[in-house]
Image (cartoon, rainbow, N blue to C red; front, side, top):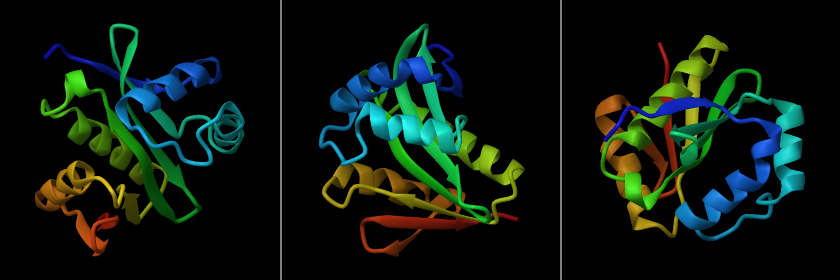
Amino acid sequence: MPELAIRPWRLEEAQAVLDFWRLAAPGETPTDDTRGLGALWRQDEGSLLLALDRERIVGTVIAALDGWRGGIYRLAVAPSHRRHGLGRRLVAEAERRLAVRGAKRLAALASSHSQQARGFWDSLSDAGWKPTHPGARYAKTLP
């Protein structure tokens, strides 16, 4: 798999992000619209990270900070790019960015309806992630 770029999104990419989520993470949430993404942008414009294969979005993760605790949401990887470590790279970059901003504890939400999502987060136990609520919420304490 070629080296992929990971960078913060740009507001003008909102529709492309929504289209990607429909492909890679079906099952819309109430915030999956341009208004919700606009609110995210206004709150913390750098919190949504994109993984790009050339200019095509192939992965996303939201790394948000509430002042002391970091949250990881909307981790999604294109079906064509799964099982090559991209999810782990996105989580690691989210962790790095949150640690730099002062987060000491991280929480991630996984779809409670997706065995694949729960399996992914379970596989990160070697990186310190532990389930705190069976099958849906995982947490990690940073040094």
